[in-house]
Image 1 (cartoon, rainbow, N blue to C red):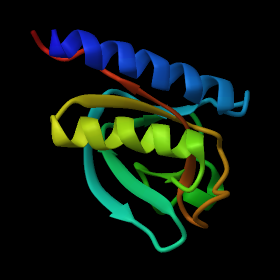
Image 2 (cartoon, helix red, strand yellow; image 1 turned 45 degrees about the vertical axis):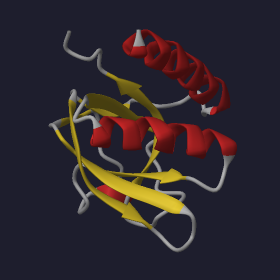
Image 3 (cartoon, one colour; image 1 turned 60 degrees about the vertical axis):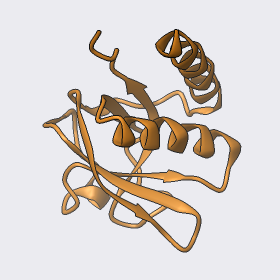
Image 4 (cartoon, rainbow, N blue to C red; image 1 turned 180 degrees about the vertical axis):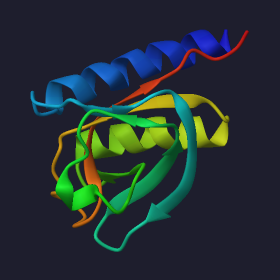
Length: 121
């Protein structure tokens, strides 16, 4: 029952993220666990994912590897941050896609969307 409510909430959050996200995004990682979550002074949240990246890493993010950033000062960013913190707290895997620019943090790719893996039953 709890997972059903979480799943419905996640579908709503995911729909919000897709609607609020830029169309162009091709950089991503495979499913992996969240690590190294940083809350920054400008309202952004940076995090890493323990997974290999696919696609072309933008030059601005070449040194940060599998680190991503969310602008948590916006409604869509807060929705993404909720998915991120839930995945981190419950040790669930996520899949991240970026927008191929570092618009929030100079050396970290900005997140387009986060997809939460189905929990094990």
